[in-house]
Image (tube, rainbow, N blue to C red; front, side):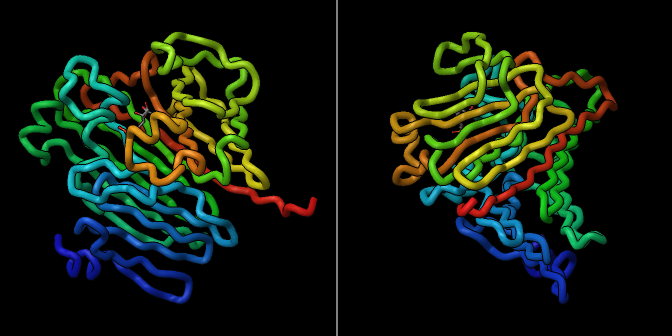
Length: 308
Ligand code: TA6
C-alpha cells in the first residue's frame, strides 16, 4: 500500500496527538506517533521501533548516528526483532544472523488511540507471503503479530502462531538498545545468581555474581529467568518487565568489537546497552501445529532530580 493510502487508512490528528506515515531514510516508510504521554517512531521494515520518548523524559532508545537505513539491512539500534532464530542459524552459516523478521517489510494491520490516551500499533508478518528465498530458509507457514503500545510505558507483544502442519522451534529476542549516559557507569539489577552463556568465552556456562557492570565486551545469554530488570545509569532507572520470555541477553560490544562493526558511530558503544527479552539456547520455543506463543515486555523510566 502506498503512503497516501496508508495515511488515508491509519493516520489521525486530534487534540491529544497524531499518527502519520512518512517516507524515511532509504525510502523505508516510518510511522511517527505523538500523544499526551509519549512520542515514538517505528519503521515498516522489521516493525522496528526507532525511538520512544515518554513525556518529560529523554530518549530511552539508542539509535546509532551511523545506522544504515537500506532495504534488507538491519538497523543499528532501536528494537530489532530477532526471529525465528536468535544469533547465528544452527546449521546454515549463510543464513542471516538473528533471522529475517528484522529485515523484512511488515504489514500495518491497525493503529488506534486507547482510552488512557496511549497509541496502539499492530503489525503482522505472514511467512507465506514472503520471498521464495525466505521460505527456503523457513518452510513453515507462520504468522507473527506485534502489538506496540506507546504511552508513559512502552508495551511490546510479539506473538508467534504456527499455521503449518509441522512442529516448529523458534528462538527470538526483542533486541532493545537502551540509551545510557555512560555504559561504564551503568548497573544492571535482576540477574544475580542466574546462569548465563558467556559468548566471548566460547559460550561457557557461568553464574552471575551481583550486579552487572560494563568495562569490556559483555555478550551473555542469561537462562531460565523471568526476572524484572532495572538498568541504573546516573539519575535514571529503566525498568523492564517481561512475560513469556525465559532468557535475558545483555550485550555491549565495547571499543574493539564496536570499531569492527563500523556502524556504532564515534564512541557510540559508550551510550548504548542492550538488554534483550528473549527465548534463546535451551529456552527455545517449540510449537505444535496451531499453537501460539507470546513474548510480552513492558518498559518504564524514572528520572530522579540530581540535587537529591
Ligand atoms: O544480542 C547480542 C548479539 O547476539 C551479539 O553477539 C552481536 O552479534 C549483536 O547481537 C548484534 O548483532 P547484529 O547481527 O545486529 O550485528
